[in-house]
Length: 122
Length: 498
Image: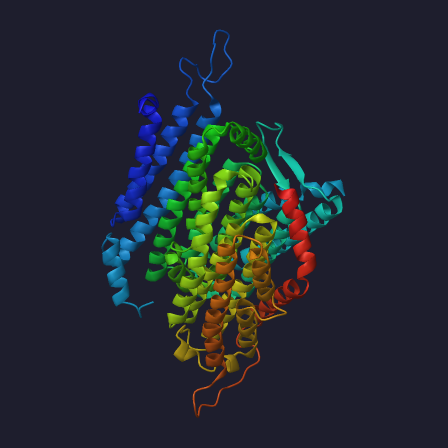
């Protein structure tokens, strides 16, 4: 329990990951699924960023009077992850637009029902 | 000869470069460029294989000016080179064989973009096979997910869009779990290069620290990759995805994309975690169990289908189960069998998808069995190739499928009695089930409806499909007849792999 309070940033990150994961898995609305995916990714990024932070450290650029530096590698990983996350979000949103144009709703259950009715339509 | 060590790097960068070129070319030129590029990739991979076999050891290739533990690395031995060679050849043959369907299914203005995606997908696959850095692995895994989703959703009909949505959602769940897993590994070990992570994990194993968190982390990585590769019960996206995509995409998705994830999983298991590390035990047993369940469930579901495409898709789910069963058995024999089956399935499934698409084409584009009656007479080449693929999947001797089933049963002997017993029983049951649905399909396509005179054509409307299918069938027979040299290569490669 003390560990949990001491590492509260990591704990919050994992909780965020869980919230996002469940939303992505179980929510029926496509846009909310995409939001869930973004929360999930943000959780991971928070985890990484808090891991690389050194208390009292300065930015990882050489300076005369700096004693500690923040670890730059996790920050680099977060940046890469953000790029990936943005492109995935873009693709998912474009899919949502296309599905809405075709089926007129964003609820996946509805869409499956309509698609099953139109099974012969190509 | 020393120049050959640059080949893996060149093949990845060349594939990325081809993608850029394809964005500038018109559709037809992009197709020709892609076919040439994949042929070059196959040659480069063959060169790499030759080099590693002569050298007899694995090569670590530094990317950029920084060495370990900071820089990025490629590492390759025989196993990586062999896998890359098979992947490049299958990619080449799928693109050649399915070109006609791409023209039919993809909007004319987007054909060059389709080939752009194929090139990016090739680069991502090769990078997954060669990389020695776990975060690079993650990045290319996401590129593979995005490009495979792209070649799926480029066919703009409603069901394909829906299938793509489902495919992407399950894949993103898998990516999320995998990302969290590797970040936790990085958190504990402080390294991103696989050998350094392995060292740190060994140290931790000696002191016994973090045993439970590391088991959970291993579970996250294995679970993420299992979801992405479509292990039961996460196979639900397969039938729609493979059934509604353009046949080239179905062939590539089932033959290569899921194999890329499995290869990465095998690499992480052997190179990062280590096969005899206790933190792997639980995850491996769970994968074994779900592999067995997947074999039975996939085969039973395949029997119930009314459409040839969905039947082959469920059969894919069963074959993924076989591979995970081999991984779950563990040991060199289990892993060698899993990798052999990975290669077998990579050359067989695209053959089945492409020949089934040709058979559908002469049956009014309908995948329903009733309409496929006598299709093998209307297109004899495709009918023959479908039969070859089906016999390989059933496990008839001289085809590769037989050898991989033999290897699985050999690998099972000598384990705990429960594991041996369950593998042998499941293999027997699934062979019967496979026979049931494939023989039924073969009988269907060779019997004409009563009183109907078929117009018999040797190749149907397209020759190139039959030609590339024949090469895949030949690769299948080579893998089946020359299994010992291939297996020896895989085993030598596995020894160098970790």
